[in-house]
Length: 292
Image (tube, rainbow, N blue to C red; front, side, top):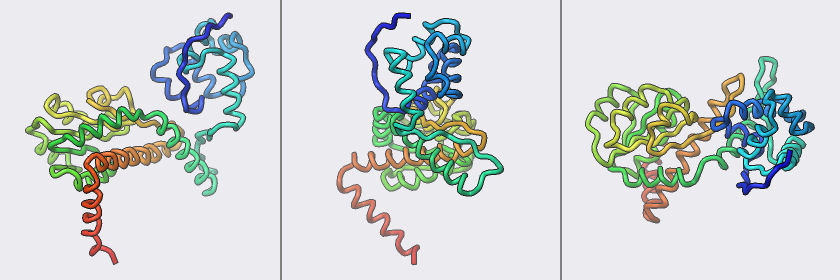
């Protein structure tokens, strides 16, 4: 089959990570190809374009062409060479590994640390700076800033509140849904709700956010781009983590989300000017009597 060259935008992501990141926008046929390559990358690099089409049941070479163009490649050969280089160890690439009952402490340490490194690398490339800037601008202009999050996401929300209460006069967080309902009963222009939910389906986060719109603006921090929370957000920050059989991906996702909070806090501090850091230092010093 003749391949035509089309302009492409190269991604800084490792190719297998890139494939995973694009699954949400792929057609069912493209997903079949993607899932085969993700499960058997070493076999895929040895296949011709017709063999890959046949092996994945797509029957058409044009489906494979559309697949690699979705990833930003102009030719099948370039795609295969890039994949072969990656799985050969010549690029930044660590596989996500399942954790089993037979694993030693050393195995668990290696798998979790490598998985975290890989996840941080992917999120570094995948989270658009433009999205973070929109969040910074909303937070900076907020008259009242509310953080919503429960359970594990509540820990991130509380950490965010502890940081931003030193920048914003009106900043709130509560782990009780009833108190939040009372606090958010009268939304005002200038309100910003910062909603944290990895699933994006937490009712106690999504419902208050919907009820406060369009008067209040909603920033979402979630791992689910197609979730209820993501769909209603004015600014949606999507973090990524790989699913494995043991739920370490949730732990890693939260590490990434805490890092996102730190980025936003630091960027907001910079936006307020040099005096902000002096005030933050005073705030830290005010806590010194609590330590030996």
